[in-house]
Length: 488
Image (cartoon, rainbow, N blue to C red; front, side):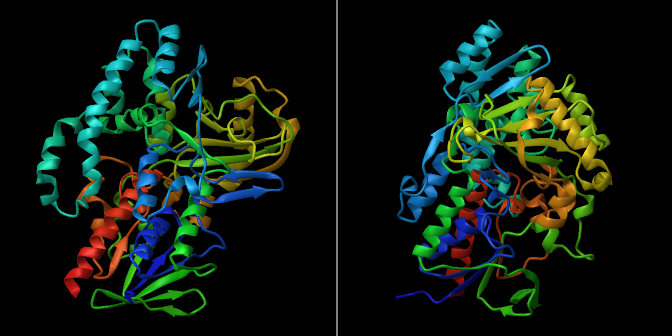
């Protein structure tokens, strides 16, 4: 018998799509309302002429989480998406040395032994100890941590030593590597969290670890192919998607949402609501808003270039400034722009020939920059900063004629992230991942608790990569099913 419980999901990012997959598979009546004309949010495809770009994420690890989601929906992910291994994972460019690192642990160990003799044993220990850490920390992702009592579960207590309280990631990496280059090489993944490795808790060493343990992959056609596959499953399950349907406010009665009002005045009625909007941006009010007292991640200056030449860059290239700590302090604490930049370059054409025509390149350049609490005027700074970014790439990657081949160009500034993508302060990674903002202390747990609302997506937890967003969707779905069972 078909379950007639109506579910309205706000936003069509990967968190929404994962939730819709699970609920439509269980035969709930699921409808998604998206303000744009396409799915994906920051995982959407951006096309410029004959060039294709992923707006946001550039690589995928922990693919077992995605596989598990599709298995829960009686599907095989490989029937929908083709995944290619990225090798090398990235090539690192320091001022005095450059070297690649690979998904294959033996290959990475060989590189380390070649460039930093003796340090390969530290890599062995890093992988061994983080395997144990991952074993203890992974089950914690299954809990909601909506109250202090969740921290006293036996599973949590067993994991406490692995949380390494009071130690930063950079402190932790010093236990394994003497070389400052290797410490930075195994902390650069913090660009996914928008934080400095000197600030982020040591427990996040499982992020660089996961790239070498699980491998790193690129879906043919880009990350957007993953959300397209998710949409296909939802459609197969008779779920509905409504585009150009922006939810502007909720109608509330006795802490229960009675309707979601669209920009055109239409009111959507459902039994339960899930929101995948940037939670901090959309759900806080002047009276309840504690958001301004919180600590936010960095933002990102993004430059998308369609080049009519094939450049010999790795899938991912990382340019390090002379003083990475100074760059981090400028970005996160002083909130000023640096002259000597950290630059992340994605060149999917190195792995996938569908993103650009043959002998052409679709290049995405990302530079961490202060979020909009810095009051930087991007209308004024964009032109000069763009040139600084290009000059840095031309100099450090030895491509002096790079600009001669630009056919298409698109820029996203922190101002754009806030105004066009509705991300508070343009902080693309949300709240900083510090202990004072985890679990029941996370802002999404401190706002009014509506009886029939569930928060999903990157704004709902600390962990903004796709695997964690999917796991959060699974947790929210489980919480919903428990609540719905009690109500019957």
